[in-house]
Length: 311
Image (tube, rainbow, N blue to C red):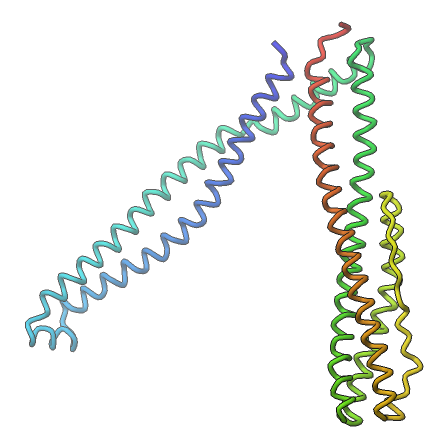
């Protein structure tokens, strides 16, 4: 019997029990909350019955019109139904508690088995590497490829993070330019000095954000180069230092500034689409890479687990 494979079988069995335990623990929390609500509902219904039986202004009028007994019977049925629901949940809750207790007892040796498996696996790995088995080269090739895939995984994650950071800042720039565009339209329609000032404020905010965008674009390009992905992205600097309409407010300068705002907004939107598309592709690549790593990990484990010596 292959001791390593037997340990693996036991571990996999206990892992399925661990998953089941997690399900029961989550179910227990929901049932406990449900039990609390149902207990409150039962107590309320019972109090309604007691109020009618003890006598109150409501029961007095019901009795006067010959409706008291009917009302009490109705309230008693509702209290009985609420009690039944509460007790039913209590019964289910107790069963779940028993299942949790039993599962915890069954998986108590899980960590011990994992340590035994890891120690025995390491031992067999050393035996394989010291052997002349034809499986040795396959193992070495597989572990080297896995190491390369792990490096790629790290680089893909860094590229995705850079892309998401750039997207976030581009969205901020887009928001500022859209606001500037809106106020610019009002400015051209004669919004006055305050309108022009507000527009200028949004433009300055956008330019401040664009400084960060330019740095993040370079960072994103570098990360893409690390994973052999090229990115062609023309990006306008967004320099609005030559704007004069805020000081020489007239219709023609307003039009010129509005045109610059529109160009900058279009450029930001184009850049945003390119970055989002590249980030999406990176996420697909990391999924493929993860699948390949999983397959390689399984193959490496199988090579060691199935090793029977110099054969």
